[in-house]
Amino acid sequence: MSHAADASHPADHIPTGLDNKKLMMWLFLASDCMFFGTLITTHLVYRKIYENVGVDPITVFDIELTTASSFILLMSSLLMALAVSAIHKGDVKSFRWNLVGVIIFGTLFLGGQVYEFNHFVHLGLTLSTGTFGSTFYVMTGTHGVHVALGILWLISWLVYSFSPKFNAHENAVDVETAGLYWHFVDIVWIVIFTAVYLIEYV
Image (tube, rainbow, N blue to C red; front, side):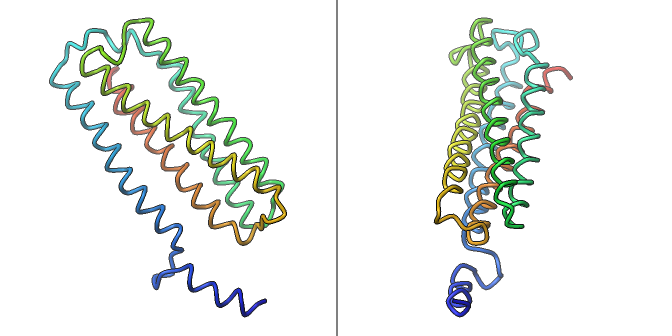
């Protein structure tokens, strides 16, 4: 058994020692980073060119709600780190509780975003409100889709953790890979919150 484990170990790693699954995730995140960079840059450039956006973002934005949602998402990132730490230690019970916390906090963030979009539409900021509306909704909506996919991914791990096939040691890297994705989504949101929301108040 030990020999089999040792034999399979090198196949999962490249010569640098980095796990292939983590390497693939880093490559995906690098491409996603450029994608979000394009969306954010496009919004900021058009915001600068077309200062008259049809609505006043300061009167439309609910900065208190968005700040609270951002804090919730940051706390989910902390719980994700604790979940990864727990599974590396083989503490499945702690892993599950922390994962439940991440899923709840992520869902609360999405609920806040849905409420926020509905609030914005009622105040006149829609997808067709010039370039500001279109670039804003495409950018934040794309991020929301990423959060939703992350939640579904984590739910699948939570359900799988009750399967007899689940092994904390063997699946630790898989969970860590999901954690990388979740941390990336959180970081992207902090950039969006700062560059799109807070900049309007400067």
